[in-house]
Image (spheres, rainbow, N blue to C red):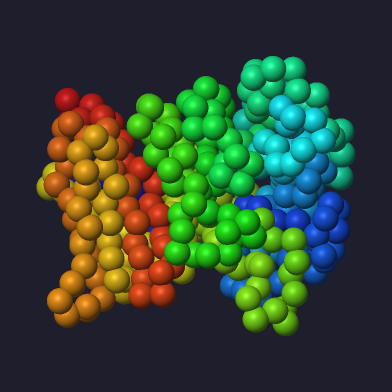
Length: 325
């Protein structure tokens, strides 16, 4: 099995939020004010993902901060006039060759969407893809999605595994069970943590923003580079801890992280170990797992002493075996 680096200890990482709202839908601050809030929090990029209105905000882009075009498309519900319904994050892919024209700035979309059977979510995903976008399956637990939806539908590149506004508890990876169901059934999808922030009040002791994010490794801070890394899974998600490196070396998957209480390997169908100093309670910054050919995938969760979590993306063992051949 050849050595391979998934997250490089020496490569630049950029912190971003892919799910937030402004006064263009039901947020509390304007887009310009929201951008400033996230700059103050040390973010490098955001996607202004207002409900059913597409945002292109290049005017906010600088050498140290960028915005990614996108929106949140929702209002699709099998039970009329009831919430919650299916919501999808929609993110412009600069390298896509769209079959339909790209969406324009502040282009608005009708809601609610008519439910025309179980194929309706797939039709909406396909439509968003056709216009040159990546699709994220947003907060599956909040909208009471069925686990089989993770397998039934295609065309989404990631699942929102942590949504701060609907959870507000960093001890829970509340969407991870949906992620596992997708992965166990052969889907190759990544996991994303986000805020879904609406109220960006700097005075709140428990702020709604800054609770979940992605850290993307890319050569440059540009929309094209950031989105390319997102598509390739060169990022991790977090509510606190940092994953510094993730690599395969001498048949072991090795993770390096900021000081944590536990490092947990999630593997299937063989169970991965969890690593901690159970007697002394010393912080853990390095752990590894032997890669077995029977494993379908392995991913890592790093949990700090406050219960905050960092999630790696899955390493697909079949790819490593093919590369060895």
